[in-house]
Image 1 (cartoon, one colour):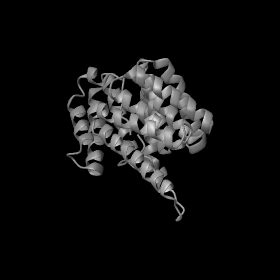
Image 2 (image 1 turned 90 degrees about the vertical axis):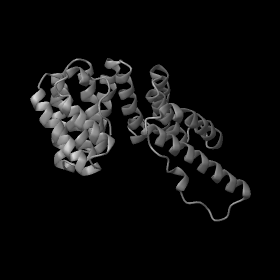
Image 3 (image 1 turned 180 degrees about the horizontal axis):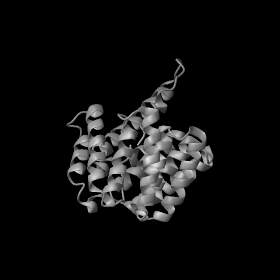
Image 4 (image 1 turned 60 degrees about the vertical axis):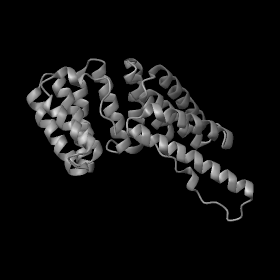
Length: 262
């Protein structure tokens, strides 16, 4: 989820009381969106959903349905509903959001591609693997063309496309794609970067799925050490990586439906 920054644009010094009140309303909506994002990050998506529903209604009233901030909140609501386990409803909301962003911004606008990437992940989580493969492939190709192969957004899409392959049962192909993305990420950003660590952890997960436990342990160990250096040993993501390393001999733990995201 992306915290809204649109309310910080420069304003005229001469404001009517109505304009000042409007600014206050918009800031309140932004605060609700930010609070919801924090709740989702803490694993409390069900609590975030009503805040986002309120913020979305307020944005539509104050700013209009096609305002970029309204579309941001609408996308966040879809993601929160998905995270709350209401997958069918979440997919529907995110599908609508992608269509609206395409209409307002165009097919290849970064904001549209962000919505497309999120929907591809939602498709994978909901078991719509064919749709996930098609959409993730399209977004990845467009981001690679516009941003290059090692841009963080492109790496995120490449990882999602690989995980969709794994979810479709082609784990060897997924592993090849992940290793290529990991190589690009490490060269561009170094080993102790969130995208590099996420890609390495997914490489390890695929190795575990394929029964290559020894390789998986070594790969998880490297990812965990880099995460500890970046975030600290007690950080939840670091702890999770060490737990994965300890369970690398249990392939069922790594069945691909949802992979690491950044």
